Length: 256
Image 1 (spheres, one colour):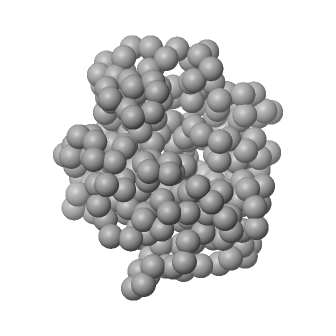
Image 2 (spheres, helix red, strand yellow):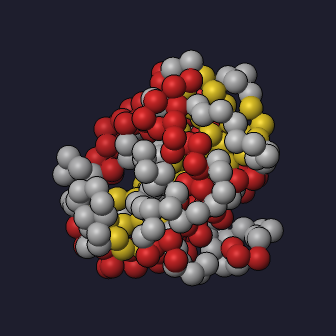
Image 3 (cartoon, one colour):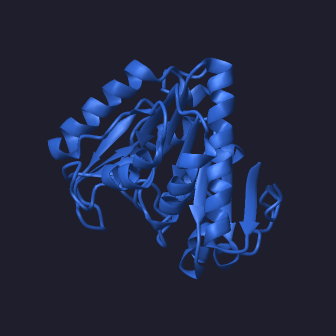
């Protein structure tokens, strides 16, 4: 069942997201001794990253991954790694997390192949994987934004990357409708295999996309293809659509 948390504004969305991420990381570390989180770029996750730096008191044993990256160098202003470094990594005191950067400067194919190898080497498959998840690395929590077109990570509507097989881990993107066209992205299979997926959305421009994500699964809305029973949406009032008829959700309307 998809869980929906609706809050008053973007700041409370970021606060709730930081708290949820920290709780999942603490639980994973207690249960398995290590915690794996995949972060995203974008304006909505950015503030959550800033708050997350202080929400988790101890970062030892945490490994930070990326949901996607633009094919640029790590110091380029378009780099998701640079954004995460500024908003999160540089704010952490004490033992830092281990960071696994997508090497966008290698280009889509080589960068994706290198990242897939790194995920296989460092992230274990799930203990009780679903039939379509056999052998996939299982992240503890992925943090995603959503575009007005319903895209998540760099998985865009109708893109061939959505047709990658269940064994795909990381994919090169050559024709992103948003610049730059070349990117690296986690596969839909890896996003679906994560133990928990948090989808953050703020603002009225995201309302229709959120509504479509909660509707029938379709490649025209990549967010609708996420595994809904592991999905939590954290929204502000402006981004929150009416609940779709017949779709099972659990709403907490900002309860802690």
